[in-house]
Length: 317
Ligand SMILES: CC(C)NC(=O)[C@H](Cc1c[nH]c2ccccc12)NC(=O)[C@H](CCCC/N=C(/NCCC(=O)O)S[C@H]1O[C@H](COP(=O)(O)OP(=O)(O)OC[C@H]2O[C@@H](n3cnc4c(N)ncnc43)[C@H](O)[C@@H]2O)[C@@H](O)[C@H]1O)NC(=O)OCc1ccccc1
Ligand SMILES: [Zn+2]
Image 1: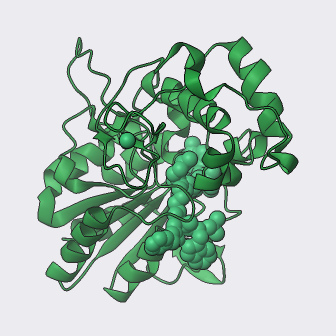
Image 2: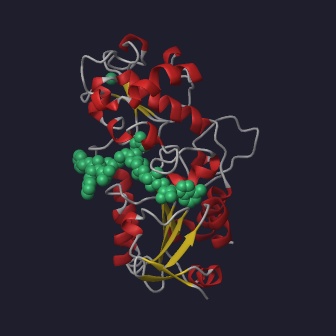
Image 3: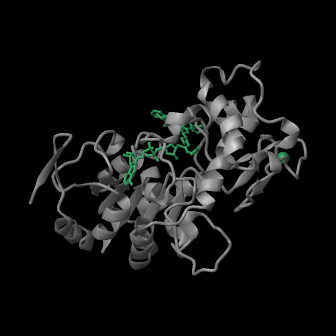
């Protein structure tokens, strides 16, 4: 069977060989990125047309950016909430949910970097509660670790205030955050494009603060998206849960690295951690450009180039 030169590695590209490895794997991890939801119509970050291309997101996804222009940051996240709420799960999400059910809590954990709640689950229509993509098909929540939390949690920007609003799917959150082409074209795009001076306090604010959602608890603080911004710690209970699962089993047999450039830390460190616990690495990605911590593939590893929504179901069937 064909061997693929990936970073001096001898990774297999054979699905039948992967099926054998999957059958022999008792403990499996998946590390997922934006590419998993690309087929659901959600922009990736760095890919073609990726968010990072239009909006220097690493400078929108920071407490400093929110401090400086909360309206601009809120427009960016309101747009992504709107898109995620209107997105449909794809076949890769269903396949991962099925693997989770088959392997059970001890056998499979999905580590998602996506804040739109992917991998999805399927709730039988006409279920109207638009839970995140991941929660829409009984993907056992105990087997889903949202490393960077979710767009659908809101919290208070006041450090001293512990207000937290879980699973808030209201869209729009307030009139000023109504996602319309005009609102994006007139307020978000221009400001986000000229990011070179976005921290310049003289630059006009995208939205007056009194039009933004405020904290119902302390009443002074602005509400902010409950996602993990750059420079912020990942949710400790989530990280502890993953480390306990990894240590509890002495070994990890396989890690699926799906649709990610694996360049954001500490999320990307799980590839190396899984390797240390004996795991084979199976990478699924549309292109072999930037594979970050998953780029040094070796004998026994797997590389599948293409759309996750097509390849993951084939790999897990
Ligand atoms: C840029 C990077 C180098 N910087 C970091 O990693 C930083 C700094 C840092 C920390 N440690 C380090 C060590 C070394 C270097 C840097 C650091 N990390 C942090 O700041 C972290 C927090 C990082 C989390 C940031 N938040 C996100 N998201 C939420 C917000 C939001 O989303 O707005 S990160 C965000 O970007 C990342 C994007 O990556 P991907 O999902 O992989 O998306 P991308 O577009 O890049 O790639 C898509 C891939 O899919 C492929 N694809 C496309 N279509 C398809 C398709 N159809 N099928 C298959 N594949 C496909 C493409 O080819 C491509 O390969 C994800 O993690 C995503 O969640 N916090 C922290 O360290 O805090 C400290 C601390 C510790 C304790 C106490 C206090 C503080
Ligand atoms: Zn508050």
